[in-house]
Length: 75
Image (spheres, rainbow, N blue to C red):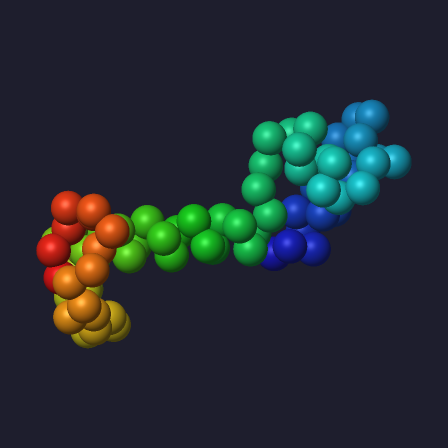
């Protein structure tokens, strides 16, 4: 998939001489790795807040340490 995205960005007029990262910036695109990371973070958020079909406790164990440095979410 990344290879296809690299090729596509090279085909855009005026961008073929730029580096892949610069082409992505010019087109306001993310790398596929960044998109996967974003999707993972969104899913963890949804799991934590009960908005996903996947149970949060299936993948994560909450720390019982009560020191949260002032954060309002309780363990």
